[in-house]
Length: 72
Image 1 (spheres, rainbow, N blue to C red):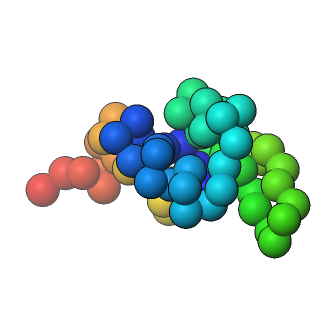
Image 2: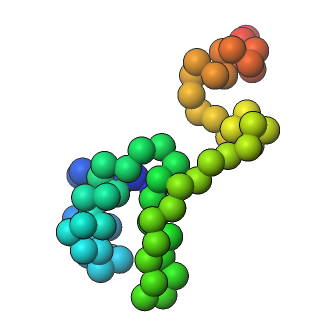
């Protein structure tokens, strides 16, 4: 689970039985940071895409325009 919006964190916390520390972590997480949850185990993660993955999945308008894919 990656960064969560303040408006939805309480519902998410209840659904996944998150601690206050985990809730705060998800509220303050940077891009690519989150929690990996498997059963009762939890671990903080950092996801770093490769150059080609980043080009494929980016939603950053500046990157899209620079790549030429945003032109009409």
